[in-house]
Amino acid sequence: MIRYDSIPYWPEDVYLDSNGLKDETLDTLSPMNEISYIMLKEIDHQKNIGQIAEIVCNRYDWPLEQVKPDVLELIHQLNQGYLINIQSPRSMKQKVRDRFISLLYFLRTFQGTRWNIRKRIGLDKNRSFWKLFWQIAISVSRVMVMHVFLLSIVLYFIFTFLQFPAMVGAIIFFIGLISGFILHEYGHVATFYLLASRNQHAFFALKRGTFQVIKKELDAKKECWVTLMGPLLPTIVGGIMFCILFAVGDIPNWISWMASGLFTFHLVWLLPIFVDGKKLWSLLRMKPEKKLEKGKGEKTA
Image 1 (cartoon, rainbow, N blue to C red):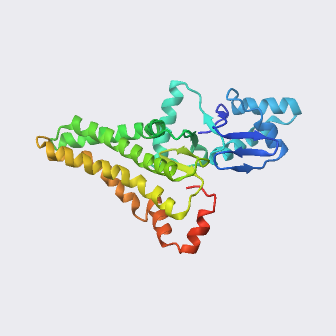
Image 2 (image 1 turned 90 degrees about the vertical axis):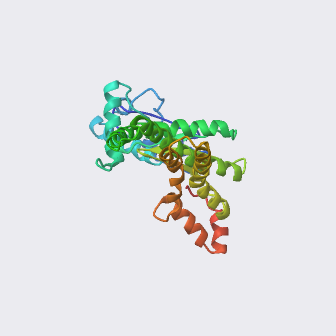
Image 3 (image 1 turned 180 degrees about the horizontal axis):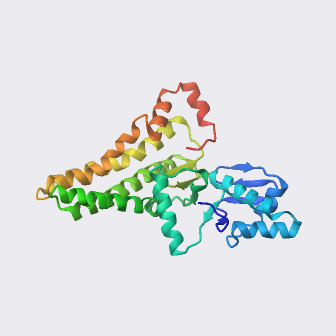
């Protein structure tokens, strides 16, 4: 949750000047008024939102009770547009509380825009696919690890009841589910950097329970490949894994099916009810002349 003790800081490639906020990754400029500029120029990755409000109020003799909520709302709006990141207080009590809130938000039990903190992570501009992989692996793991750990505990008890090796099954589930999503997002990013020009970049966007690649949009054919390779990469890895485990022979079949299934199930993301599927099918149905127009746009995906 964004609170008065939350510390805002600028993401990579986002800069503030008198004309507004410049996003160099997407090559956009977000204009703002003079008062917003006065508030935002106090951001230094040290002061929290409450302190920023107090500083500008003391300097310009503004009423604190009115300005403080305005600063909070401004930071919240910029965070929702991935133009500013938020650092929460690092006390253990706050960490546990935020993790619990994150789980409730992920399960749609808790709702509200202020609970939905977003984070922008810049991707390696040198296009090192190894560095890109580790950036995505760390980011996805941070979002998923607590949720998947709790699901693994539930699965442990289910396997115990079914008289399967419960610990083995829970570990396979934990590693397989997270690894599958890492490969999924890496498939999107790696394909984008393979097909995009050298001056086109992207960033990885995190919000509670989900992740997304934000970028300038390519032409329709390239966008199809970028969209397709997310679900396809873990599916290919899962198929290879199943063949290897099945060929070994002395590994129980349920382990082979479970380990590979956690990767191959990503094919369901190509169904039209999911984001990847919706985008892919809309691109495939697009008329040729509209595909050319779409390739000239600068939208996010």
